[in-house]
Length: 349
Image 1 (cartoon, rainbow, N blue to C red):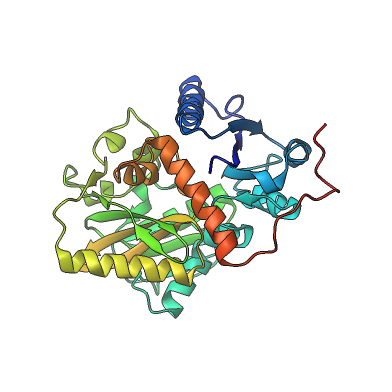
Image 2 (cartoon, one colour):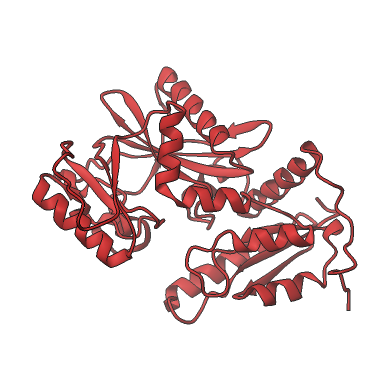
């Protein structure tokens, strides 16, 4: 890696939607990465971006043959959930970049498509249904408690205590709320009330399951609270956040561990994930159920993926270096067309 420059591309961490604390945390992450990567003798640069034109203009000044891009860009051009735009541009110019490709990022954002694929491949996942209109009848749904959430959102956005419903009246109210609030389908599934495993994996040809973390929800008496909702992920001073902190499972039953790893690897392959992902699974009566496939998981230092990776013995900067190495290996392994300077784009001036 010392013969390559790492460019970190990420969104501007200030302005609308960013609190002062969030901006500070984000910049602290960037500073940590730059310091720890530089200590390994690797040139590293961070570019904060908000539009496709800005990113393209910046990339034209760099040689793809000597660069690996750590893609930390969540959106461009003010488009919500536009994770795919940066990879599209990187592929167009010819850069090696970390993480999943545009097609995968778009596909896995759609819970309905992911669920249908899991079912088609006979991978264990909760029963579900989708409601796209307020006129649809919901009386045929008879699995309670059920979880209701937006079908096209991520990061637990739109999930609250009220998302867990116990009867048709509550179901109808929550479906109506989701459709009206998010202007999209409501996704309803069997609520699995058990231990949750967050399982991070990286690699391509050779996959490595990283140390497994779990949330047991034992501090909540009310099962309506036993879920990873928006507050438990992002609101640091909330009761939900404080009571749902994941922990490393050091003494997991060997048979269960092997079953979980087998399920995760098959899911990763079926959904054509690349480089890294995190798959969330919950248990009921000893059986695992896939809840979510995160092909663009939180990659901050305190996020679940980085914590699992760091538990293997590397620091935060080492995690990102490893991801860049995985991306380079992928390009070589799949025998992509050799990356050469593109005279239409590369301009060192």
